[in-house]
Amino acid sequence: MSDLVVVLPVFNEASRLEALLERIQRALNGRPYRILAVDDGSRDASAAILSRRSADLPLVVLTHAVNCGLAQTLYDGLRWVADHCREPDVAITMDADDTHDPSYILPLAAQIDQGYDVVIASRFQPQSRVIGVPLQRRLFSYGVFVLLRVLMPIPGVRDYACGYRALRAGVVRQGIEQFGDRLCELRSWGFICTAEVLWKLSTVGARCTEIPFVLRYDLKESTSRMRTLRTIGGYGLLAWKARGRPQRSA
Image (tube, rainbow, N blue to C red; front, side):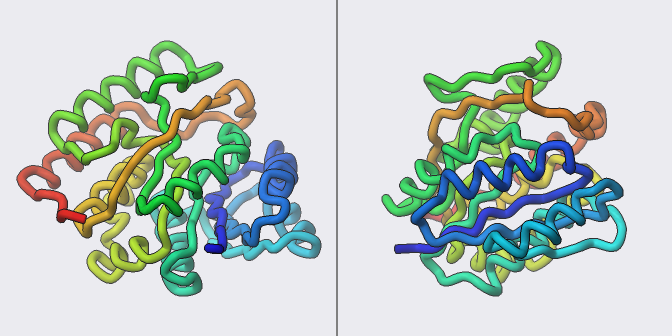
């Protein structure tokens, strides 16, 4: 059986972090797993919570001395996966604010066991729902979906932006061998890194699929850090960079 590594980018998530760690523990009871938390210079009690829980959980903590942003944090987590995991092991990336229900971890991993390399918890599949997301944000997400489906199509993908995913460790290693730290090249564009990683893994032959997902944005207590105009510009830049570059056949 493949091992699971749950990768958590953490920045000032103390209000929900401990509850999330406990929910992950319950969801994965009986399955070999580790949690890799990348603390991106948190200024609240997140570091203290991670230090305390590392005594009773299979928890590895990487720490940035200063806030480096989501792209660097995600890259450092994936780099650790490439360096420490076996080819068939599964990395689960998810948000640390408890809006991603850990009950989806095993269904995501099950699709990796069926032969896929990337499995996305998608907001755009039948039976998917979003709870507590403002209408403006929902319209923005749908606009991103339309833009990228037209300009940067990836077989099996509808939700380019959701960071709740399962990734085969072998394909993560391929992506890092191909791109190095350019796997998350658009660092100054914030949340664009989730779509960028997806596109770049598709170019090394990753087979992608999705499962339906209920996003519980109503559980989010920290404020959103997405800058709308910068994010729109970043998606446009990513689509421009991806133009004419086909995905490699799996």
